Image 1 (cartoon, rainbow, N blue to C red):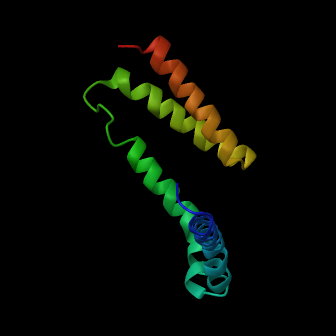
Image 2: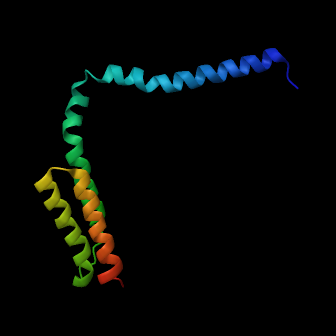
Image 3: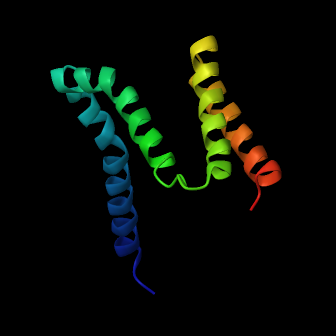
Amino acid sequence: MPDTRYLLAAVLASAAVTWALRAAPFVALARLRASNTVDYLSTRMPAGVMVILFAYCLRDLPLTTPAHLLPPLLALAVTIGLHLWRRSALLGILAGTSVHVVLASTLFAH
């Protein structure tokens, strides 16, 4: 069994590394708050992320089978409609996902 000083040094080293790793993001964030780039990205990223998600979700639509197009397109319409009406992305995403799951698993199941 290792001696007490070795164990104490190991615990202190582990604690110091853990503390530094947990503090590092806050130190970096404090320096980035005044950055023009971060300010620009904070206003542009939400729309960019939504465009990427839109393209990703609709990339495999079976364009040759109109019946399989209906669930994702209706879910997309519900998502967009609710977001424009209520200005709630969460409500639109939850409702759109629910509509897609219900339609794809019941009415349009393959």
